[in-house]
Image 1 (cartoon, rainbow, N blue to C red):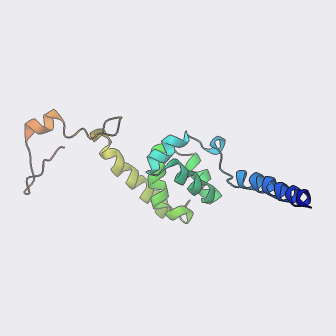
Image 2: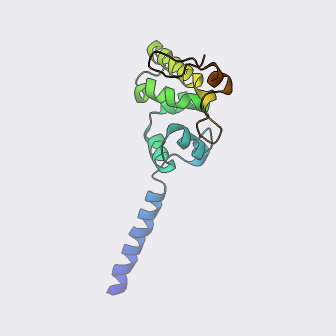
Image 3: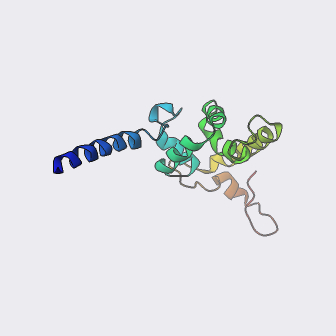
Length: 136
């Protein structure tokens, strides 16, 4: 009697493990860039990115896969999670956010630490009316 109960339970647990193991359709092979780099670029953990990627609309995943990694953040923000993909409004917003980001890219080191103003900017000592340094 006891064995007849254990066999179906073991079969159920085995089937459940297979279903749970294959529940996430996003795999490392489906990412256009290394998953750690993408998660860092998007400002989230790897696990959170994988969950987000598996739930993102297919049109958005396709749009992102065709872009450089640096444009992923502006694309997600401007395309409002896939609702404005392909629209003029989304494209204009994406290009503006990317340009804004690249305008300050030279202020950061490769390891993510802040460089600060250049020596030439500090030597000019040009400030606005509130005393903030102006580097142009």
